[in-house]
Image (tube, rainbow, N blue to C red; front, side, top):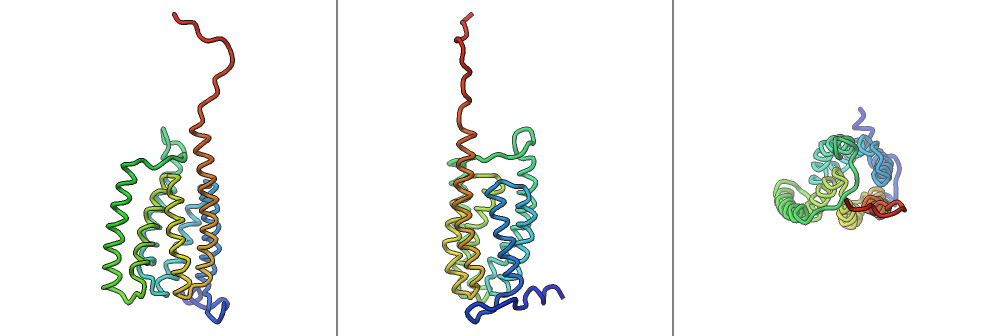
Length: 218
């Protein structure tokens, strides 16, 4: 059965087994973030495959909020795939943009609410030993993915914040390869932020005025 194979041990690191799901999640995750940074539409199907692998991995590790988050990621992946293709002006490809003040306020309110609700839910309904960081990273990841679907340059900052919590969290849960993966993600997020900001500067740069005499007023 495919699930049994995915949850089987591929190799061991410091005496801790690494499953095939974690190994394949590592490979597809790195490829996905690299494609996002380069604004390649193929990041979405690769990302959907990645979250399905991570869903299985997190559930077996007792990270229930993270496991449930992957279901939402599949839906957001489908939406992002479509929106990148036709979400621009006159249903053209989407371009990089900034997050507005009103949108930031809505995201902040949603983040606080999501963290609180998930914290209580995971703490009371599961045997999780890390309910607060699990809930917080889930909320940050959802907000970052929303920003990614709309090509908001600030979505990279949200991913960076989430990764800085994910890395020690996964190491604590014994998911050493996944912790290394998120360290790679952190570096890729910094590169993605720089690339999207450079693209945004090109969009914002005013067009050069062609040389020649000024037009004569009528």
